[in-house]
Length: 124
Image (tube, rainbow, N blue to C red):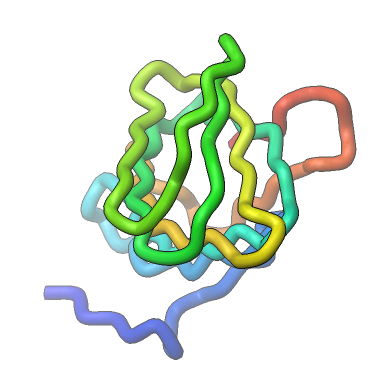
């Protein structure tokens, strides 16, 4: 059994927020679980080419925008799943951080960060 507490997990500044990595590849369960903060007012161009990701909003607000331009509002109780390695924009509201619990498969190594300064979508 693995038991972890937020104050004891590895925290990574992924580019536009923090990712608290509760489960990673070395834990051997085949997936990762993160508690992710997306900083207020940020917009991230993301695409997970090597992972599938599902995110469940537990705090704050924002939106996820698909490549067809469809905006999906995020608020507590909303889930989105990138089941086809979907490129997307993750946007936190200008007035508050967005907080997500995210599951990645296969598992993250645990030290990944995004490169958000280019014109391409950042990916792991």
